[in-house]
Length: 152
Image: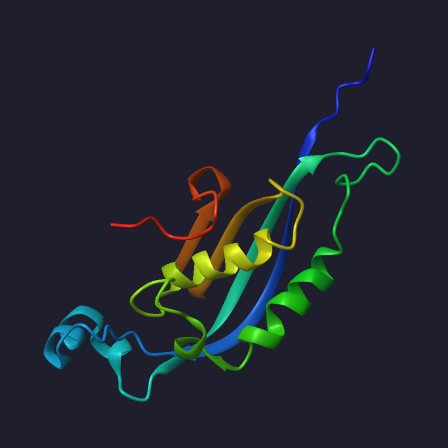
């Protein structure tokens, strides 16, 4: 009889700094100002984001660790930092991602990038903290299969 293998969730944290301007080009200047307030400043604004990435899977019987563990810290550093640290998010968020570089949209972009580099089903949760009072989460059960946002 095979021993029952428990599932474990492991969370890794990474910080990066980036700037953006919340601005929808389909709206007027007044509509953007009303919708986004000071986050619509023409020169943008920045944040030091905290990204928590949770991986879930079985514990390997031979190591007692998450089975087939990717080197998560290296994966995060190699996938996220060169692209997002000290970047202008407006230049990285494409029209297929969303109308503007909100942190909600950023969550979806990060999910798609990381899920493509991990074993299927291993990425369980992303949490992006924009400020100490604002954070956004995306969970595997709630994400679209292709990592893209739902069409309206």
